[in-house]
Image (cartoon, rainbow, N blue to C red; front, side, top):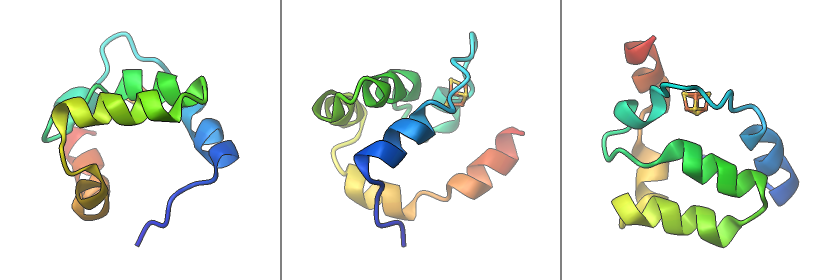
Length: 78
Ligand code: SF4
C-alpha cells in the first residue's frame, strides 16, 4: 500500500512531468482529474491547492489513490 511521499519527494516526482501539449493522463483517469494542474501545484509546493484540484472531480481521493490500478491504466493507454 502506498504510504505517501515526503514534500521533497513529491516535488521531485512532480518535476518528472513532461507538460505534454495533449496530455493523456486526464483521459486515462476514470474521474478525469486535471492531473497537469495538480502536478503544477505540487511543483509550486502548493499542497493545499493540489488537493483542491483533485477534490473538484473526486470526493474520495484517499480511497481512489489506494484502489486505482494505475499500472493497468498505463498499460492500456500505452
Ligand atoms: S502527467 Fe500528464 S502531462 Fe505529465 S507527462 Fe504524464 S501525460 Fe504528460
